[in-house]
Image 1 (tube, rainbow, N blue to C red):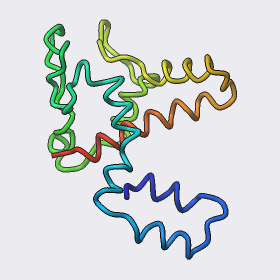
Image 2 (cartoon, helix red, strand yellow):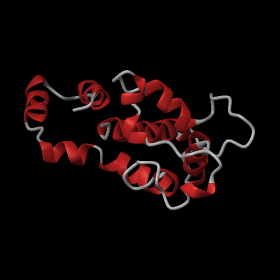
Image 3 (cartoon, helix red, strand yellow):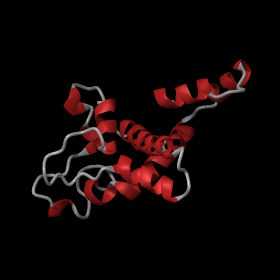
Length: 145
């Protein structure tokens, strides 16, 4: 289980110690793949056109950019073996990162918040946007080389 999922399980109201132990002990490789299914789906919808289905930087439109599209499976390797979790969150969210003029990376935090508001989640839109970004980051963390 990833650290974020553990926190969500531990903070879920109404779960007793027995139920928590049962949830944690039943984790398997199959469940691990399911654990990141939402993040993978978000990634495939929002990122794969540029970064590729395999997150290797070889998406169908990657050749349209002046600079190479990053291989996202090597983020940890390029960061001394540690996945740069907060940096990846900030880059995907895009609202707190100062970008150079013409940066092709979309601002997904704003897009996800606007989509939630369009669906009527006026007061929960920020939480929904952050959750969608976190799901993608957790998926990317799970596919590191």
